[in-house]
Image (cartoon, rainbow, N blue to C red; front, side, top):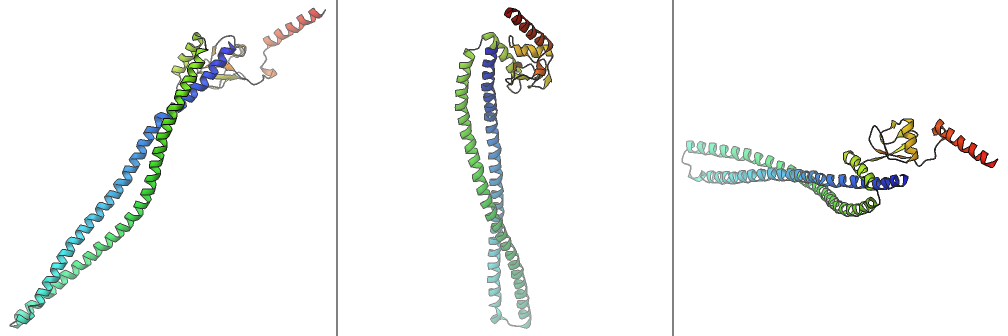
Length: 263
């Protein structure tokens, strides 16, 4: 039975690798989805800032056109000075000139404010665009690496499943079926646990002395009463404190028989 347990231990090692790789394989697409959403957020932020700048540019262009008309109006008004016939017309002309100049001045100040806003936003856009492009490039590289890793994992899994099939062929069906039943219920793909110093290393439960001794003998498959894993003896050399009274008595009898033979 010890030989069968060694085969199960080898199978467990393969199954753990398969479990870990499949978990990684399942996690990578979700990770890529998160990374792609990060790229979308950065691109949306850039698009929003560009849209704000575009709106400001259009607003400035509209005011520039109005200012142009205001300046043309001012030229037209001042050009009428030669046609003035009386003081009233002169005063009316001055009022029009003053009103138009005030309007043009206020509009010019608005245009300058908009221009400064555009310059500030363009500088902000340039900085954010540079940072975002660098970050996006790094994210895209990570996505590419993850996709490559998914392909690598598929190849490794194919090889591991082939090795698993070879190991299973050499395990007795009744032993393999027991192992498989335990494995199917395990949340972490562990169906084997080492028993050492009367402790199951799978769950750290202290094992009854009788059970531990049976595990050491390895004549049958023994299962941990707590975690339900198949128990295999530790490969470490046993301390004298682990030897039970029954074993000591058995060894004593062997020695006595040997002495009788010598006589």
